[in-house]
Image (cartoon, rainbow, N blue to C red):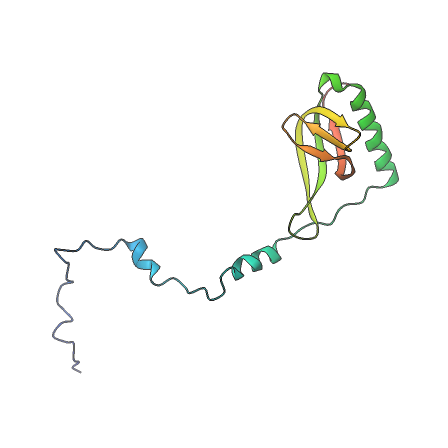
Length: 137
């Protein structure tokens, strides 16, 4: 079977002496998919991102948390090392995540209802799920 290009099919690939070859990365860009709906992929990823519901503390857990905060308040001058687990509300959608932070306790602010850590974090007391101290108090 003979075709119209049989006379060229076995010729060596032409390399221009005037123009440099295009890098492979740029060559592939011309075949990238067309995104008709710009941002749609981001919306899908955001919708698929999972968040947790805020855990509810039992009355006994709330009492224990309050007791630990009172003990830490009495020893705030020692700047005790604490590990705080708290619920961080998601900024974009309903729910959030449980976060654990370890740092020295800088201050317990009763007027703003937050604890301030030396690493710069401020955690709302109502969001705290658990607080532990490694220091002997």
